[in-house]
Length: 134
Ligand SMILES: [Zn+2]
Image (spheres, rainbow, N blue to C red):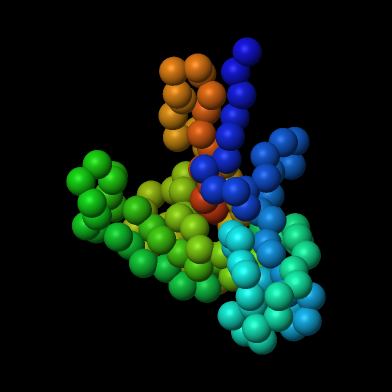
């Protein structure tokens, strides 16, 4: 019996993997991960909100140097998912400016990062081009 666990607690797996944001009930600002207070309005009440799985690349950086063991280059991006900004890597396409562009449509992609001795897989996420980039 094997299973899968998300690398971050705001990644929801299953038939339709998606990200789950923490949304301030006062000002609707969205965050990822646990919060004690809203960074925008200091509100302390939050609800969980599913984030759109498709979005638009708002900014990106091609990372050429990283810590030992981290494969480079890779593309670190900020993706606007229907109004929610999500930081993630662009995956499943060559990491160069011919294949990654501002305004490019992308969708959430999940992938296994490795398994522990019990066969439980850790699952990470990134964004892949919605359309083939050739
Ligand atoms: Zn707030």
